[in-house]
Length: 220
Ligand code: PMT
Image (cartoon, rainbow, N blue to C red; front, side, top):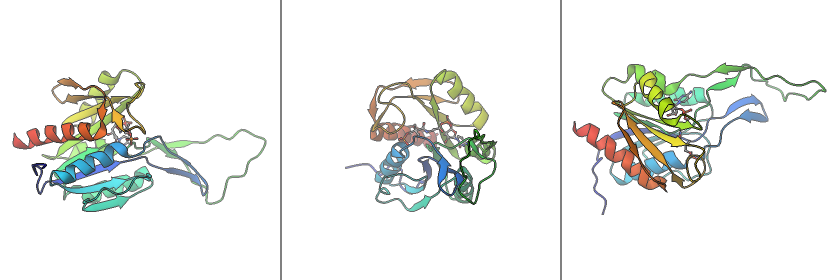
């Protein structure tokens, strides 16, 4: 039996990719399958938490027991829903892969091809995590860092810039880590700079390690 050690805790989890439309038939996205975030949601439910899951489009079933499931497409949609649901949640885990850029203008009609090259101009999206970091007060805020190089340095900068309690850093160059797969290889770095390194594990086991760390923070 699983101990309901997160009973009545309200946890907001984001998962999956965002989609940024170019025209009615084309979009920009990324390789997130949603598995990492859905796994955290599944394990948090088992441990008794009230889970709100804000998710981009994935092929996964909504985890059984999730209280509040919100499907979104774009980074702007995700931002709006996170802000809307912030007040009701004391713990926020941002495992979604959010687009940093979106097309400057979205065409209502399918863009026709011509013999010329096409230049797509991009605008910055909100950095959702950074915005929450500014207003989080005593909420627990956990981010992810997906990197191909300088993993620890980049992750540490994200903790500072986004005011996180800790960050889960995955090195996308390692086999069995990051996007799409059922496993991950992570380093968890806290805001004091302490680093814990984990071997390749199932995303469900990593989810429980993340939730254990949150529980410790709650007890402090
Ligand atoms: O979904 P899977 O296939 O299981 O893959 C899991 C994963 C690789 C997507 C996941 O483990 C992961 O690393 N998620 C974060 C991916 C990411 O966008 O990393 P980042 O380093 O670009 O962003 C850092 C943090 O800021 C993330 O918590 C991200 O959610 C957040 N962010 C980023 C950009 C943005 N505009 N707003 C944000 O909130």
